[in-house]
Amino acid sequence: MRFAHAPPLVLLCSLCAGCATQAPATPAAVHDVRSIHIVVHGWHAGVAIAREDIATSVWPEALDFPAADHIEAGWGDRDYYTAPGFRLSYALRALFLPTPSVLHLVGIRGRVACFPARDIVELRVPRSSVERLVGYIAGSHARDEAGRGIVVAPGLYGGGRFYLSNESYHLFRTSNVWLARGLREAGIRVVPGLAFSSTGLMSQLRELDYAHEVECPSGMERLSNR
Image (cartoon, rainbow, N blue to C red; front, side, top):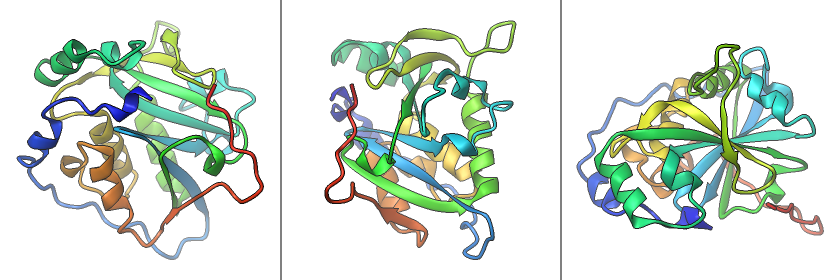
């Protein structure tokens, strides 16, 4: 998949990133615990949230995937993310200039653990954390006069869609930093400045006592990403 190509110089720049103060850890003892899944596609990571945990009054684009059990969301540079193949010129421009961005939404049917991906980590968090994360993602959408998200292209897989974002992509705000900021806003202990790559993000998440690697159960068919 194209996600495996990391934009040049990002790993070098990560050495210069400052360390922010960590957000408080998610409380260990809560009564209403929900699951979110961090899904890694090579360079890029996204987050999958159960459809039943998404308030469509907050994030109405979830209604575009009525048959989904989960919604996977990712974010990135518009030209680079939507291009049919890797293009160095897009990657370099995204690094050195603030560029328009898009959200990539996909509806997942069945278990997230059986979704094609390099790595999947489940985070068990309070419902309030999921609500804040949903609000963060919804707030990244650019909207038309009717308040609806703006579809700009078909998605990369699974009947997904690209939606215009109201944020800019640049060297210090990569797709994984965007996701890390959302997780941090949800109360999850992660440092966005150390999450330039999916490896940097996942290494932090694996340190959490409420994070668990998940795999498709033996005998179950893996889901298609087509």
